Length: 219
Image (cartoon, rainbow, N blue to C red; front, side):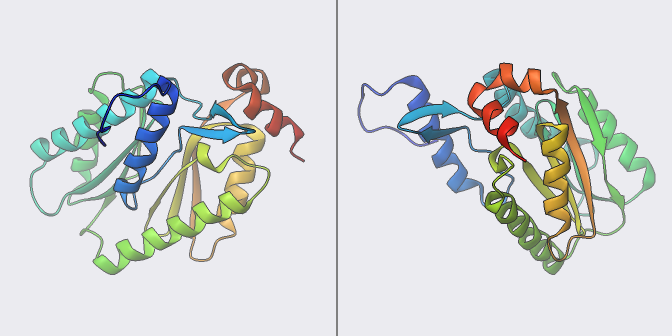
């Protein structure tokens, strides 16, 4: 986390936004969700998760990685954990079928985990070239979502494994359908799996009035 050289009069929300932006630069190819944006000179919070859920997601991922390593040590276990609003997506490879169950049980027991989506495959770990290809597909999907004018790209986490694109976020049914449609149009994508928490338009409006206005005005 970046350190501020001196105390300033910046509001807490601006300081939080700067911290999130700095952290994003250090994440590399990991899924990124922007926490705030400047609209018309005003700071607007765009992450539809509560601040508590955002913190929980970070803690869950750290704990999951540690506990999976303890339960299944070895170089043949390559599990990626992605938590969004306390829903955990598992991707990667394990040596045996029983290991898939073990990993799921270990993660499910972590505090605040609401559900686990187990997409682990049985087999050898991905090669470097396969990982590079997956990262490239993720980048292209993110870019396509950003280019689209009728979805909030910063509300969607993108995870790619063996050509399968997993989309996570808190979206309306319309947004979820549109995001999946965009991802399917990207070259190299074998399949799109929606791991969304679906919101009604009313729930979206109560979460973020500005976001709801854009969603409602989209075709």
